[in-house]
Image 1: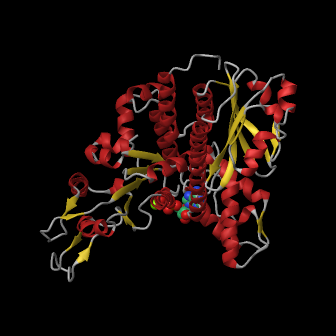
Image 2: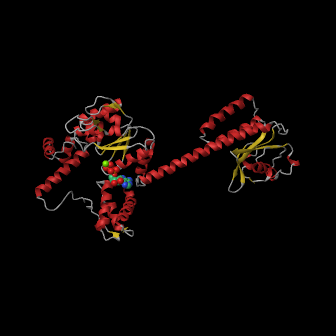
Image 3: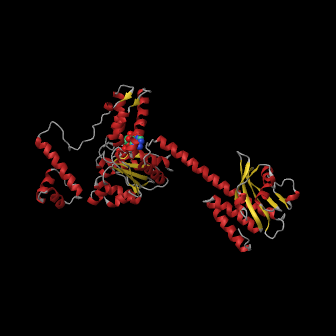
Length: 500
Ligand SMILES: Nc1ncnc2c1ncn2[C@@H]1O[C@H](COP(=O)(O)OP(=O)(O)O)[C@@H](O)[C@H]1O
Ligand SMILES: [Mg+2]
C-alpha cells in the first residue's frame, strides 16, 4: 500500500466492497486484508496489522500486515501479554500510545530488527462474544504525526467487522464438518462399500441430487446396488423422515400394478373389498422407488406419465383427484436409451424420469473393490454364524478377482454367504466359492453335447461377435465372414439374433 491519497469516495467504495464480501465469505484471507488495508487508508496510517491469537500456544501471529515492512513483520510472533498487541489481547482493552518510547509496554525488538522507526500505535481487540481472538493495530500517520484518540472508535468498528468475518467463516467450517460427519454416518449405515473412482463418483452424485426433488434414473446391471443407492439418496435428503416406498414394476401385471401405484376404492373391481391406498399416496412428501421401470407396459407408461405431468391421479374406481408431492427415483438394468429409440419406452416419460441419470458401475469394472467387499461380507456372515475367527485365503480372493461377476455384488454376497456356511469354519478356500471360472478362449466348449449343437453354439457366437463389430451392419459382417448377405439373414432368424 503506497501513499495513495485517501479520498472519502475511495473509502466508501472499499467499505461497500467489504460489506459485499462479508456476507459471502468465500475468501477469508482476502477479506481480512481488505479490512486492514481500508482501516489503515482511512486513518492515513503508515502501516496496519491484524494479529490472531493462537490459544494453544498463547501467541499472536501476524495474519495481515500492510506498509513497507509487511513481509518482514510477518515472520514475528508475540507472546500473550508481551508488547502492546500482547497487552491488548490479554486485557481486552483498546490502547492508544502516542509516543511508544515513553511506554514500558512497548516491545521494541520487532521494530528495531526490521529497521522501522515507530512513534505511535493504536491497538484494539477483536472479540467473538467474550473471547478475544486477536487484535487490529495501526502504526503512525503517513505525514509523520501521531495517531490520535479519535481514531480508536473507528478502528474498533473495523475490528468488529474482522471478528464477524472470522466468526462467519468458522460457522461455515463447522457446518461443513457436520455435513461431512453426517454423510459418513449415512454412508456407513447404508454401507455402500467401495473405494474405486467410479463408485466414489456415483456416491458424490447421489449426495448432490439428494438435496433436491429432482427425479433420478439409476441405470446398471442387476445386483450393482441400484436400490441401495436409491435408499442413500432418500436418506441423505430433506425427505428422510418421510417414507421411501419401493415398487417393482416387473412383478405385477397391469391391473394389479395400477392398483398398487394409485390405490383403489372399495368395490372398484372384483376382489376390491376395501379401499386401498396406493404407493404414490403412501410416498407423499417422500420418495417412490420404481424398480425395473424398463419392464412397464406402454399402457402403464402412459398412466404414469400423466401423474408426473399433472401431479394428480385418481384411485382406481375413484373420482376425487388426489395430489401428492413425491420424488421419483427409478431404476432399470435395461439399455433404456435403446428402448426409447426402438419405441418400446416412451420418450416423454423417459425425459420425466431421467432428469438426472446415475450409472452404477458393474463389479467387473471396479475389481479393485473386490477385496474390500469380500472383507465386508465376511464380517457380516461370520458374525451371523458365530465364527469370529474365520478368515479368507488369498487364493479365494484371487479367484474372486479373476471372476467376471455377471450377477455383480448380489452374486458376490451370495457366494460369500455360501462359502461361510459350507467351508471349514477357519479359512475360506477357493473351492468354497460357488463360482464357475472364466470362460477360456475356446468359445463355449462344454462336454456332453452333440457336434451339431456345439457348431451351432459356435456359429451363433461368431455371428453375434461380427455383427457387434460392424455395429449391426449386415452387409459388412457378411463380407468379413465370407458369406452371402441373404444367408446371414437366414442365420440371424435361425439364431434369433435380430436385436444384435
Ligand atoms: N457397494 C455395495 N456395498 C455393499 N453392498 C452392496 C453394494 N452394492 C450392492 N450391495 C448389496 O448387493 C445386493 C444387491 O443390491 P441392490 O441394490 O438390490 O442391487 P440392484 O437394485 O442394482 O439389483 C444387496 O444385498 C446390497 O445390499
Ligand atoms: Mg434391484
